[in-house]
Image 1 (cartoon, rainbow, N blue to C red):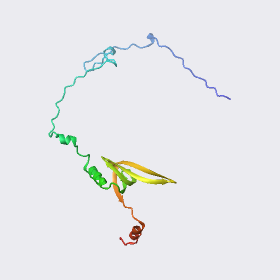
Image 2 (cartoon, rainbow, N blue to C red):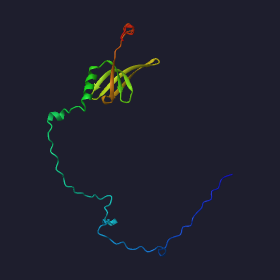
Image 3 (cartoon, one colour):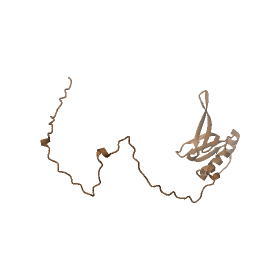
Image 4 (cartoon, rainbow, N blue to C red):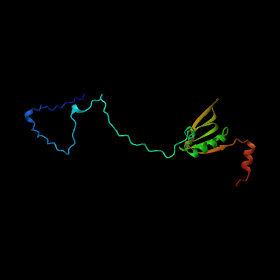
Length: 163
């Protein structure tokens, strides 16, 4: 059985002029700010011009030379040192730890500006792929270098007494 909803309608009583109480006139005082009337307001297509007095620009103490402008200093010295260290590790197997606690491992291919490119080969079944990761140097927290050794070197290392 369908449900029927009954709509409740309240009657609307029109207001007449005689039913409203009279509004007393508002006295203007000098302390109240003047409110612009509707015909005084600018329309959306009109532009308003605001004149501002130009302030005197501060005089810089040291004017940079043209060589300083063309060769700006690096953002931070630690980033520049890390970039130099990574350039020395080009072509080696490294593991890069980043600020978000993730790491990437592979062969360091390119160090350019504040970016590095790490390549890694992987296999998926019978297919082989190269993965490339591009990382900003600013997000790197630690770098580890991996050396590939053969089985004899591994056995010798594990059997040695390195404390």
